[in-house]
Length: 466
Image (tube, rainbow, N blue to C red; front, side, top):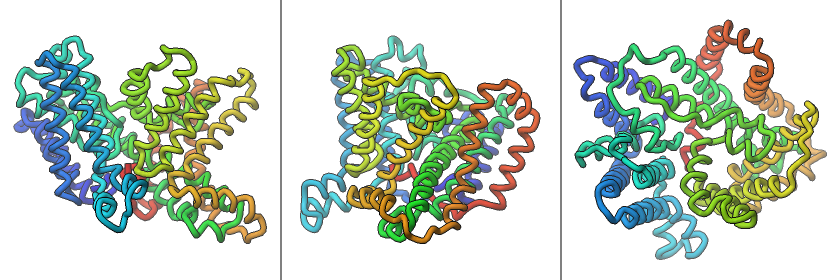
């Protein structure tokens, strides 16, 4: 079920109405669990069994991590089981094409295993639950564990299946979400803030991303071979704006939906395309993933505590693994490794800290250029096609320029750049905050109007494939 589908809007209205009825206030968590399971199982009911398996493994083992003496062994078993499930369902096709004949036997079987939606996200959240309870000095006082196993399983089920974040994040951490669980009152909800998040999110997804995808599909093979160099460059920039609008839009919708029910999820995007460095970019892009990798992978590896060489190695490996988390193709690992190399080089050769406007502008352009170049591996997961695309940029100079494609990409990409530039001006000039604060209702009214009149053809979110 998609956030931008009519069936979801009906489910949301019913859930919201029942959730805040005084007669059902004791069953608020159960109501959200039921709605979340309907949301997840709407298109593929069989996926519920895998989701329940993950929940039971993580809730039971996390409970025993709290109350048994052999905590580390239980934690290790839990992490291995989570990674084994993820590897089997997500990476079986990659193993098949890499090591087996896909037309017969094991290779054919591995290739046929379906990818359950959201498995990367709820697997990481299960690991978060285990590790946070293991590291907690007193999980009971910190509200991570209930004394009753049944209550803990119930709470853990809610933590993992809560529908705003279930299929594409943000990735939740148990130590920040569990303490929020409790009775919620409608009078305590900032409905204005919720609606602003929802309108901004739906605008980014339905007006920007869904319209841009009608033009960036030309990036795929063999369509790009017939397009001019200028058109190909504009498509690449358009896809960079599309993937931001698609995923940032989803995250804003998720935050708005969670806030409607009294729960605060962590911000997942913070204007990433204004970044001056690649380190800053990863503090602004998919923040829940980068913080998860930092907390649960990079630091446990050794972080920056074992000298520069190992720090660079751990950083590179973390980014490569983070890239592979995105999809079952070596191109994603290369994409992650590409960012790992950029982060390492950035630390090895720090650029002179010139604070002039022009120099900072050039640095922002450089980061955006490299990030945009990297997104090509998301669109073209076969290396030979990605290389051919880059070659076409250099060789298709004489082909007829399709102005319509370029203009439309410019029109729908422009709001993404305006979105970032306004943030920069707001940050530098306090008067902007006053002006925008007084006219924001007009801005959101215009966005709502555009959602109703100028939305593109509805499509699933890009990160659903991960």
